[in-house]
Length: 384
Image (cartoon, rainbow, N blue to C red; front, side, top):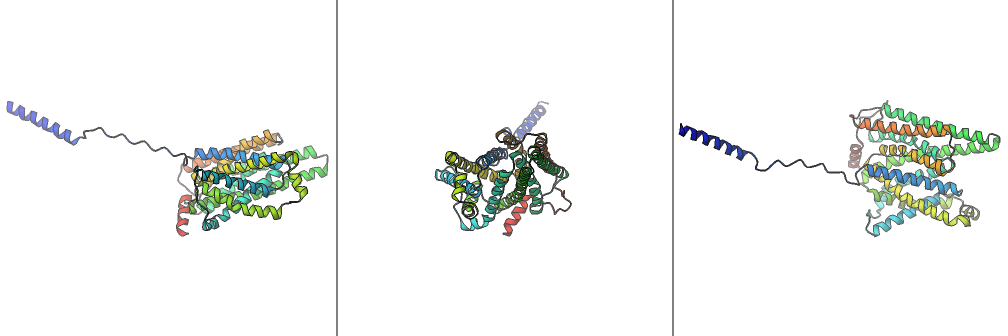
């Protein structure tokens, strides 16, 4: 019995020892936490930066163009590009930033994007000359529709029913804004047919420039996104090439298109306000640095449609700045147009969130086989 007890005890001890050998001597390592996204890849930072810089850019351009009756638009854009190039070159020389040196082959590939950027900014300055900031920002929403359908054709995207509903709200807000503008003109200048006709003609010119701006903006955003994927440009590379390639074109356009007579120069730069105008032009150039960088940053980190969506949501503070700082009429139709435009941006944002949470399916009457933008761009890069 004693021997059996000892054998049992030994068996138990051997079993415990064998179990202890099978088990690890240390506790299991806890799972590693997921790495936090870096600042450059976090979409919140570029979105907020783009919102602030777009407000600054719009208000500054409106101040320069409308505050002094300024009509040398190409000169203003040229000053903005020169200030931008000088600013980023100083930062590069100081070791703060880095970007690629000028390359002729890369410049040739990027040149169409720079032309589209010139068209986008120039048409926006012309539209701001004839339209108030609230009306300008409301009509800017129509660019989202063009970009969304451009992504369907170019990047294999899709448009859902909810997104189509938001597009309808955007169009409705634009119609309300135009009707409010015309009603304001007829109410205040209806006693004089000639003056009312002149004001309506001014509005019509603004609407035409706004149409050109929407077309140029959509082409620029889509083209820049495709070129960034193909050339692997970083944010400062995009800013450098955009502005360097724009300078000679803007100089030539200003010299050959705009009025450089002594009378017009004196009207644009009156002696008592000359320093203020120069400072405003330089400040608008610095604001163009922020808008150039943050727009490219936002497109690279998110997508071109999200970039335009952020711009739509950003229209409310921009429109309010026009009501606060400038003489934009505050009427029930104008406020209603701003509200409908803001709601359309929210509906569109919800549509994109809902669409991203589901498998991609075609949402247009005519759709190609769904393909992500990154896959399409990668396939194009192998082809080139």
